[in-house]
Image (tube, rainbow, N blue to C red; front, side, top):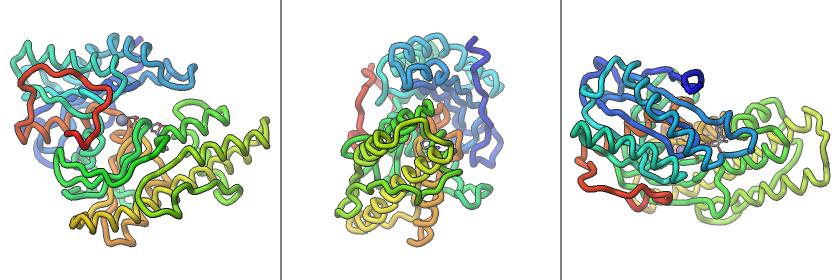
Length: 372
Ligand code: KG4
Ligand code: ZN
């Protein structure tokens, strides 16, 4: 059953050297509803990338059920790691370093991946890196990033960069000065952007995860058909608030109950998404000024995390970057949502700096980037 649901992602990476040369890392991710493993080398080649998505198991509950997720990770982890090695044409002996998510995330799942990685490291004597899941998202644009306009051109993302990190659990603007060096410029005061997409999708009865569904619907709708609020956009600072948009959406639906036509749903999604995009652009404009005050001159404007898949957000950020003489960069679609390749890459970046586990550590459900 697991075998049928394992997806072997397109390989690649920005690497130009012979695949498999340099330091080889096995990366393991299990913090939410994807069990994933990848083999990545220090020359930016992805030798294999396996994702077992549990979305079908959680769909009927309208969101991730932590206990089911933990159990599904246990059932899948060995096969996912084994398949990653097999697809890369490697054995565990060929691997130089093991990296796994050690938090933040659903702790049952994190424990499964972390214990698997610890077991492999201890039995083989290989070095182990404890990767912060958010750092995986934050650094993966350096493994491979493309401009939204010119998808064929990999952009070499260099420090410092201004990062919009938007996932199901987080929504933050960070100044990334280096590996392990994150300055928090702004963050959501309530819901994350991904949560807002998921909740609006649920309200409309469109399913889970909501982001890709709302994104696809919005492409067919008129963003000016309705007007949702843009919370905090008239205020200074770089923080977000998405709960106001969500409440406005709820109130609007209460006044306009189902059944809804396709046209209504498409317009609703487009208008909601336009409000989210405007908030992101407004806050990023403030963040650019903030970065200047911090005496940083980031050349790259980067988006990462599951919400980075959103077509309208990518397009708006591309335009924003161009207007400020910055280069826009985003991971390719399969490296935006949770994946093992980003953990392997963050593992390599930390390994290069000697940041390996030297004594047992406890995985963390909460682990802010600023505590690295
Ligand atoms: O990074 P991720 O895979 O998991 C966390 O670490 O949270 O992000 C998942 C989130 C979900 O909320 C999902 O709805 C959202 O990313 N997402 C999107 C899109 N694709 C995924 N949100 C907006 N537009 C999309 N195309
Ligand atoms: Zn994530």
